Image (cartoon, rainbow, N blue to C red; front, side, top):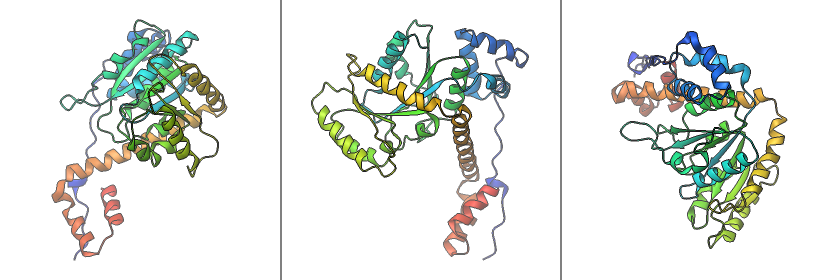
Length: 332
């Protein structure tokens, strides 16, 4: 069989950036207003970065001198664990201490518009009418890891706006949702009594990334048993280098929230000792990996079955390995 030659059918065409709603000539002024706390300016910058419009590169460059201040805390866990209610309680505690909070609430994507369903923002009552809190709902866009790359750009916007802490709540789809490990400085994994087999599923996924484990809805029957299950799972975690705290909370009545915030602060001191550029570089690596993955997916989708059939036939005949075929797709 002759060696397949590269075909244009699997070469992705770059997508044109959406037009800017912010005049590139006014970028510096918008950044000044954003850093002054003007909510309209913050919202406009986030929108441009989320859309990755033609103004986004200029905005990202203008933000560079102002980045690296905010502590980024990711909250993740299976559905039903009460993540949004817990984040709401943490916001209230942080605000009582006078700290400003940016929140990125990743919601499921609408199957029609592709936008966020906005359920998380509705449940975050602590953020209502508070100039010290800014909440942005973000669609997951179908990413299996629970985040879209836009989340990282929005983190930069909230960091650049001067918020002390950025809380990132993922969509809650289960153990695949581990992108937060690459994006957040501190990872909080939330469970709750009665999730049963979800604890077993989490052992190979979310438990591996946890800096803090939280058993929420701790006033319900079975909370202590869930605590013991998690402690047992963590005790056999191969990569563990220090004890991961397991805390019990009840977000609705506030039990355990001060202890959770205290634990976040203790870990945050350690994080602050790391160079900010290292934390930002980790998020940049995540963006590069996601962009590469999206590019490959676009090439495959554009090529369709017919475009990949010559490569598939070579794999079937044994003249090419799947790795070699994948490299051919990457090379275009």
